[in-house]
Length: 195
Image (cartoon, rainbow, N blue to C red):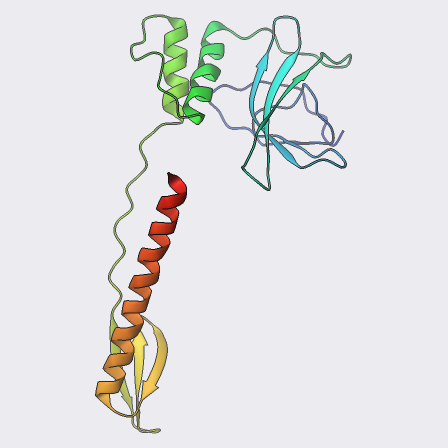
């Protein structure tokens, strides 16, 4: 094994991900399994059954087209943590539902399970922080008296030169229009993948 850390399940806190050289019941969420002759897999969910077996949901780090579910038998040298509390089980359940973008099962915290479920679900469904809209790009034209031509600037970058000011203005306008076109195209492509 590459690491010799004591297994812990941390609910709601981040830990340093570990790299394992085989599938093991000691792996936690966020850890990487890099077994020979197999894709590098990242653990995205974990559950411990009452009989000691461990369920891992993993996905490859180089592609996001599929996930796998592994059920691992209890290893001889494993010291498994004590069974999860009802809150921890519900927290993991809520987190799994949030990552799969399913409708939440609970909307009110009436018991320990629903409280854990809601905390786990809400931990992954926080509204995104709105980003301010980008400032519009501007262009400017300066005259270079040494070489006797006009230099076209977009932001702090020189994008071209011309022999008269009208041609320089056309170059600046064309560059801004092209940037706007490609940005809109990129947004349309990304939106089509999001559907």
